[in-house]
Each structure stands twice: as C-alpha cells, then as structure tokens.
Image 1 (spheres, rainbow, N blue to C red):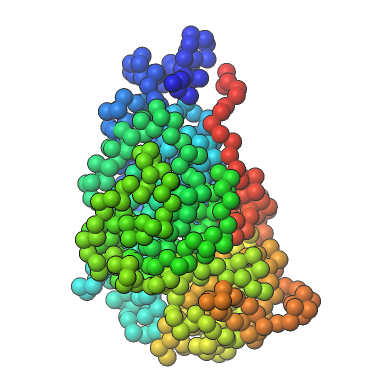
Image 2: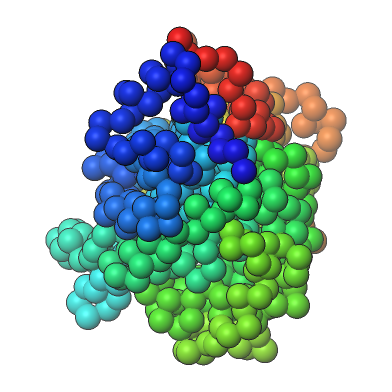
Length: 569
C-alpha cells in the first residue's frame, strides 16, 4: 500500500527534500518510508487527570517502534473539567476542531488517541471521525480508591454529598476540608462512573479501544502494557486501512448505548455520542437512547448509582464481564480496532465479584438506561437518569421555584425567606449551550439549606444545562430548546405547576398553550444569557446546535476526510 505520508516524503523534488530534512534530525533514511503514527496526547499540568499520559505515550511509542512504525508525539488541546471556566464543554468543539486540523495537516498515517478527563475522549473521537485516519484510543484510566475515616471516597460524588452535609450542619467544615487530600489518591481520572469513566467504557463499546483496556486503573502497570500493545496494533491498522468509518457504524453506536445503560453511565455521554455520530453521518437521535437503552438493566453497583468504585469494577471483571451479561442485546456485526467483532471478546469474560457486577437476574436497577422526556416544557427533549434518581420522585407534581441564572440561584437558594418546600420543583435556566455559554454542569442544584436541615436530600430539578456524571438526584436536564434559544423553559414563572412522569416520558408545565404563547422571557431571564462580543465565545454562540443533536457547531457536523490538496512551499 502507499502510505499517506509519502505525499510529503517521497521523491526528490524540492518540497519532499524540505519535509524530510526538517524532520530528519538523526533519523535514518528508512524512517520516512514507515507508517507515521501520531500519538495525540492531551496531557497538561492544568488537566490533572491526564498528567500521566506522557508516561503512557512513551509506552505507545515503544510499541510503534517495535512494530516498525515511526512514532511522533503530537500534543493536542486538553480540557481540565475541574479547572477551566465557565465550563469545559465550551471548548469541546474547539478542541475537536484543533485536533482534526492537526491530524489532517501533518504527514501522519495513523493515530493513537490519549485521553481521560471528560471532554478529551469525546473531542479526540469527533476529530478522528472527521479526518478518518486509522485511530485507536488509549483511555488514561481511573484513579485508585481513596479513603477517609475508614470509608472509601468516590471523587465527585462524595464532594457533592459531603458539601451538602456541611450545609445541613451534620458535618463540620474542618472535617470536610480534611477529606480533600484523601479524595484524589493517585494519578488518573474520577474513580466513580462519572463522565470520564463512562466515555472510556463507551469508547470501548464503540470499538475504538482494544477490548479489555478501558477501566484499567491509571496507576496499574498493565495500562502501560496495554499502551505498548496498542502502539503495535495501530501499525497493523494502517496496513489494513482500518479507519473510524469502518468501525463506527449504527451497530457500534447501539452497542455503546447498551453499555452506557448497563454500567449506569453519565448523561453527558448522550451529547457526546450524538456529536460523534454527527461527524460520521450516522442517523443517531435522542430517541434512540430511550429505544435501545431504557430497558437495559444497570448491572454495575458503582457510584453514583451504587456503592463501589472503578478499581472494584476492574477487579470484578471489567466492562467485558458486564457486556457478556447482556450479549444478546449487542449488535454482533460491530467490529473493534482489532478487526474482530466486539462480541468475540466476550467468550471468556467471567464475573469475579457478583456484588460489583450484578447477575442479570438481580440488577441494581431493572430499567436503568437514560430516559428521554418530552412535553410542553421540553418540545425537543430532555433526559433523566433513573439509576441516579429517587424512585418516589419519578412521578411528581410540584410548584416551580424559578431561577434566571446561576448567579440568581446562588444568591437566593439559602435565603430563609425563599418560598420553597420539599414538593417544589427547582427550575434553573440560562444554562444551555448558548445561554451560559457552553452548557455547564450545574443542573444538580444544591438543595435549599433550610430543607437540608429538615432532612430533605432530593428534589425534582429541571435545567437546560448538564450535570456531572458523578452527580445524583432526580434531575431533568439537557432541556431543549434551551431558554436562550427560545425554549419554553424561559417562560416558566415561579408558582407554575410542573409535572414529571418518567414512566410516561413527560415533563410539562400546567399552563394553557395560549397563555404560554403570549408570555415573553422576563428582563432578568434575558439579562442572564451570555452575550460575548468577540472570540471563540462569539463564534460558539452563533453556531452551536442544541443538546438534542449533540451541541456541536453547525459547520463542524460531517467530515472532510484526510486529503490535503496543496503544498506548503
């Protein structure tokens, strides 16, 4: 086969001389005739969950060399979920665009994609799908389990839980502060089934990770072994021309949805999978998540839905053991980066701890997949995660308490005079892709202090934003259209009655259609919407799509392939 990189390096013309000479720097002549493998690395000191990926990249590099390829370090944009403001989601599309252009513009034949923290694997896959070069993901792995006062800590989930106990007066601020150093025990991303772990699992179910690798803890030396093997594999993938477009089929996305449900994964996977599918022209819709996944049992007893953590899941058999329990629900034709069907990797995938990975006959939640809601409050859809919700609130009717922005919410939620009770429905708007901008993880609103003090630990909450995959509660989120795009969420008033019926897949406000049509957003609501004058935020707001289609930019949907027609000199 003729390598793509030969377009740069082959021949004796001036431009080929330039490309080789500037890259030579001690490399032998035959280095330019081998598969050129870019190791796309999202490591950064400001992406703490990905800092160790440079060590992982070294193992990949050794594997590429062993297989006869030429490895090339390619630092790409990383996004630290816990660090960047106003939200990492604002830059997911920018990261994907930067990666895609870097992959296309350079003389590379294949890609190894190193990601961990929430937005890095989605952006890498969006980019790889659009450029369509042979590509394989190595997830960075979860951190080891930390403990505090003899009890395991789930990062993210226990931040939310413990902070609410401080506000309720049942935990001192001093004790809360002492838990901080115990929360993050080692390198790696969140050890709960948050978005980072979910996207690693989903990437493996899609076929873009070597089966059995997702979920290996970051500190486990077997991750480096897997990285070395992946480096070898990608050279084979180039020879076989095994591209994302040959792996990421409708069946692969169906398998990802089954996996998402079976592990009790993050609702954030919905917007990411929709965006990845959009790059490939796959007709994936919000309703597919309900149709394929809502009846799938949650088998993994792991925070935030259950008790255990990612280290336990790996010990118990990992994702392959989970998928083996629902093998009959998987598409048997969907392939992986190995060239073999995903289901073939399930032939020898025993469950070693049935407390962590439940038998199918004894699930954690019988129907735990993402539920898609519609109604006059969410004409284009909203989602709820039954596995993280309170059963007694899955059908609920309550009076709305409305907040026009996150600042409005923060200023008033603990006001003793706030007219709210346990049956109220907290409504927060202005948090969608356009409104914030970027769709932040604020939908799991902290409960009013006075209700926490009374023992209340969950309420129905409705928002056009997202929530952390580590979060929990009866939260209706991703409401589309968002308030800033003219959605009816911007018209709800405090005192309106909101009804939630998850079984019926409904979320409504009990306001007559004609009255709702006459209403206009209040000045306070409009004032809460983002209004940047320049830069990426301006471009983002002008072109971002809504959550129900993946919140990509309209001009990034689809792909441009790997061809570059013009020379640089």
